[in-house]
Image (cartoon, rainbow, N blue to C red):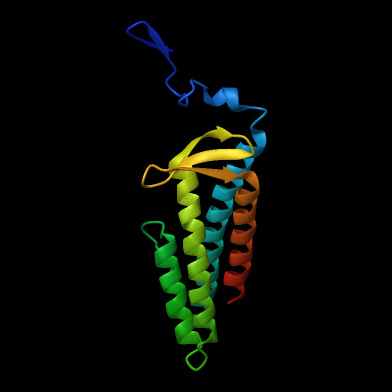
Length: 161
């Protein structure tokens, strides 16, 4: 704890002075759901990297995706779109599906960024976040669970392309 002009201040605390360790165990479901969202997104990125590597191998190219730096989702989706276009030159249905998947992923990514960058504090039934315009939004745990489920559905659709 650090003293500033006689006022005790925790180095890691929310606006109410509640430290991270004070959130457990009553907020365990909240913390678990946020962690599941982050893990689900990372698993999607890793699965997409694996799928692209498999497509490359099937096309005779063995180099890895993003050998120097870890590619972001935009680069991975661009690479997937290019490879599917080369694979299915006469059938545009896969590209149409990829476009639909990308729209869903962008929506989920905006939600994910709101949660990660804008987390404010727990609130009854969920928590509050501040968006890019500093507006407070209430996020229900059910909404967070729904977005995690949607992310898993998108992942399955993407890997089926």
